[in-house]
Image (cartoon, rainbow, N blue to C red; front, side, top):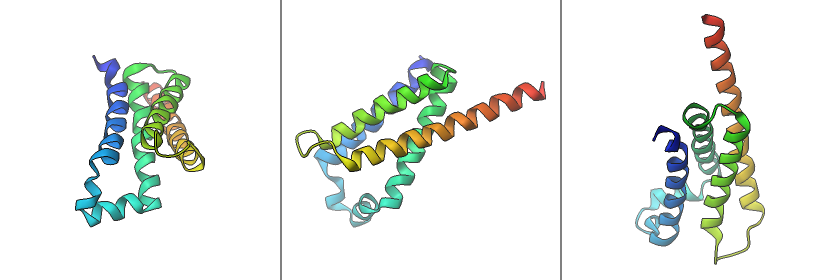
Amino acid sequence: MKSLLPVVWGLGVSLGALWIRFCRPQEDSPLFQRMIDSEPVHVVAHSLIYGSLALLSLRFFSPKPGIALLLVFCLGLLQELSQVLGIRPFAGPELFDLFVDLTAAGVGVVLWGLLVRGRALAC
């Protein structure tokens, strides 16, 4: 079951995006609306979500960096498509978000490598 944790995490993020799109909680919360509209908050949120997804993938799914990056790409793409499907074409903003997702995942992979190497040296 632990091996499914990264997939469940990623699908939860996609469901969250669909909830925001269709239930529109930001209409009842000016603070939430400001957070959604803020590009810095958007970038930090993507970085935390997809960086942690890469770490979860490396820890619980597969220790191979390529698998972690592929999982982040696929789930990031799913999340981006869920936001624009039926509204507008997939374009520059979604590509930027995928770039942020993969950059955060790359940082996660590097941190994981340093952590694993540090453990090996300590033994």
